[in-house]
Length: 193
Image 1: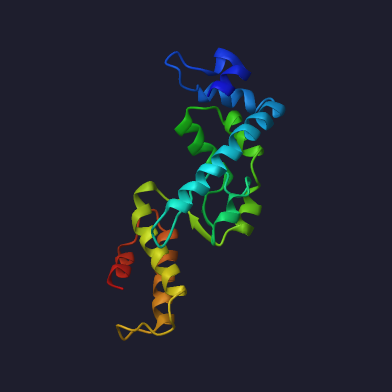
Image 2: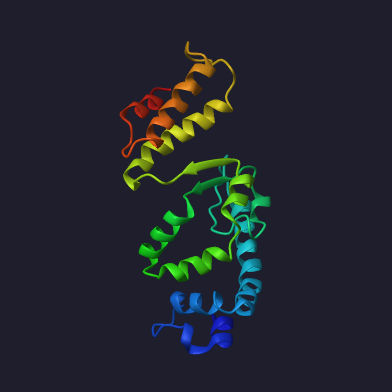
């Protein structure tokens, strides 16, 4: 924070001493050279912190959540990429409401990021996030079961159903959820697997 304050002065520091993210955003998204400076300061520190956390992890899986995962080469630290995706118009609306920012400010941020089409091409898995927030838990359950079954042995060892029919049932439930405004009750089927 000291380096940022030295560079940008008090205009980016709140009275209590924390970073004024709104003020910082206005600067870096209107002055590309300042964005470049800030990224050169922060990205190596963030990458080092992430690598340290991954090394310390003792679980079978580690999830890395990062808004600039693909742009900052952090994707090289993972085996697969899950993209939580929405069309740009919805992204603009949601981010504007969440951050209390104008659509123009949000668009200027999006313009500096990797194009959505490129992210879709690079992603291993894509989670459609266009439906209401209340539908997320059931859709995540279906999404997880479909992915697990796609990577499972062809015959499930502990029950009589065949892998392909289970994947088909779950993918159909996922389609019904995607095509409805609310979570579909049939997606509870995946809890029985």
